[in-house]
Length: 342
Image (cartoon, rainbow, N blue to C red; front, side, top):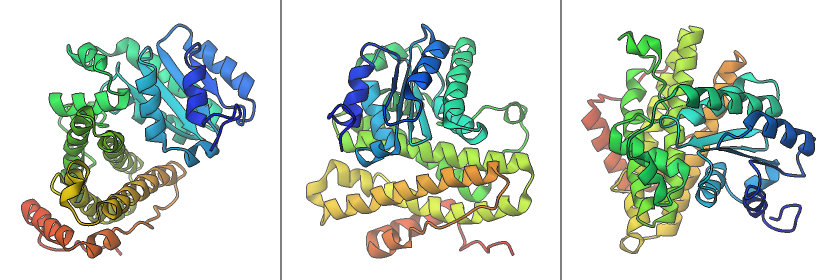
């Protein structure tokens, strides 16, 4: 796919951001006005914004676009993107996953993509003004050329920062967490795995580098979904989500385990059909990620959760994954399937 200049969409953005903080694809309605509005909001802050039409998704995923822009433009401490109205963000200045949370929350609450982008920029600036340094080593980590999203994942794993988890007053006060037992352990494992994939990416494995922020995003959005369900006090939907995502996230975590997908990426020559296996797991990641975001939007609109993703195909097709899922359940003390609420 090619952008309006005849180059790829990402190439257009990379080139435009060399001399500006904002790139808006000419395919986006009201591109010039939106670019001016965002530039005014950003001012002299080290924030880069790229806004694409949905056509850019045919060239690369949102996380791949975000990683590429971060690698090509280290002058930006935060990068925010929109692909067809779907927002994502990564930041060196904020705690792990916080920029992504801000973007997702703005997308869910604002009445338009333009308003969501403005809200994201404003909230990031405000959060950056009040946040302390992520770590004393952050500057050095950025300097090795890892994309902003990967730096977030790697720092999170190294420093024990939980990716995508808001440190709310309720949690700081020691009150109950909205994360059900059925998903808490898998989300914790996903956060740890994102750091392992980021480390493999820093060693030169490009696909692992792409997957790391995708795993972090799933963990962040799963946490966000249950926080929102808890705040709205919908016990029925909370129980249903606990059952469905208890199963789905467990299966996904088994597939992403260091002994399966990460090993396939780092040692493909030691596996039968490595390309097919990679395609299976990448599809599972995309499906779960998309459904989580869709269900967050359902919660925001006070509609019921929808569950269409089943990973039975991935697990059922691979005997080794069945074995690892049983080991995963045994380690969790799982005594069997959870009954769905009526």
